[in-house]
Image 1 (cartoon, rainbow, N blue to C red):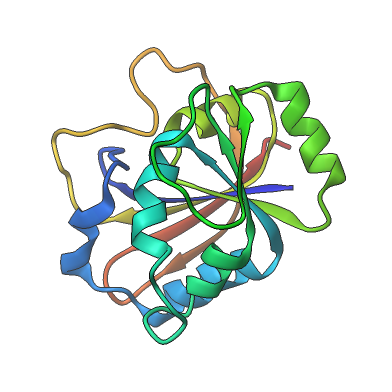
Image 2: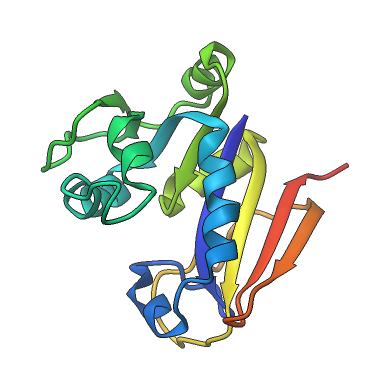
Length: 180
């Protein structure tokens, strides 16, 4: 199963989540994300997110962030038509997005495949019905500009609500799955 995790503003902006910093990181959010990572044996990222994550995570240790071992030790599959400009241990470029290839990878994977950021990839995965769970961490802020997870003209996508959490920092976690 593919499990997607996104930090998103009320107006749908997901790019460069530096804007989340003023809200802090509720420890319960870490538990929720940790559970997603614990069930995942692979990470799949689009090229742009990979190029953002690699320098941010590759030098972190478990002392810096409890998520560092997951991000650094887990196999990373990069969906990209061009080779990323950075390297990161345990990473393989699998080529441009191909739903058949992704389905094979899902079928061959023991455990879940974790996806974060990677808007173009996530939109394609949703359109092809490949997302098992979509976890949106919605921050109480309207940014007014920036790349949105769903842009104008995006195909309609209906989902089923699987669960919710509300954190002390005002963030709401919405967990969606395929429409029933």
